[in-house]
Image: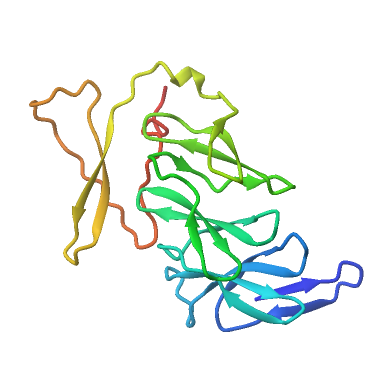
Amino acid sequence: DISVVDIATGKSTVLINTEATEANPLYSPDGKLILYRTSDIPVDWSGPKHTQVYSIAEKKTWRLAATPNEDGILLGWAPDGQSVYLLETSKTLNSIYQLGIDGKSARLWTDGKGNLVTPGALNSSRTVWGFVLQNTMQPGEAHISNLASYAPRKISNIHAALAGLPVPKTELVKWKAADGKEIEGLLTYPLNYEAGKKYPLILNVHGGPAGVFQQTFIAANQGV
């Protein structure tokens, strides 16, 4: 449930109290609306999570447009208070969507070009987003992008020592499940792989049901 607490008196007032789980409340820039995430009823911990808005003056809620995975993390409000941003898992990457508060639109904000981004954080003016970006060949570094359009710019170089070291190639593979759904996997080749030569294969299956292997830097858990 979601409540507000008067700092001076300590008095708590319940705003949203349903049989669903409500979480991650964020005030709009003008303080008139509260953005939050809610589960289905009855609660299913691995089920869909919906994005909703609560009007403090009208004491009513409404649901924003659905995203493909119906899951994710709220990043925050746009500076004009007319849209919000949400990050969710998208196959082996993460995607960020811009949702209109009228509940009618959900637009992909990131480009989905093989780089994995973390939730990160918005600055106080809600104009710049800071995050970590990585891919299977490059370790994570801090990046920033203006909120107006997705254009990552690297601002750290803490893994410079890894830049010249050999990293095995990882390839995205896809296949159809028994129900026709497309599944993604990650195939990492041996270092110094030679085409036509046979190699042993390790098959590492993710157990699920709500998690996923992603396109993270392949050498992140290896000693240097």
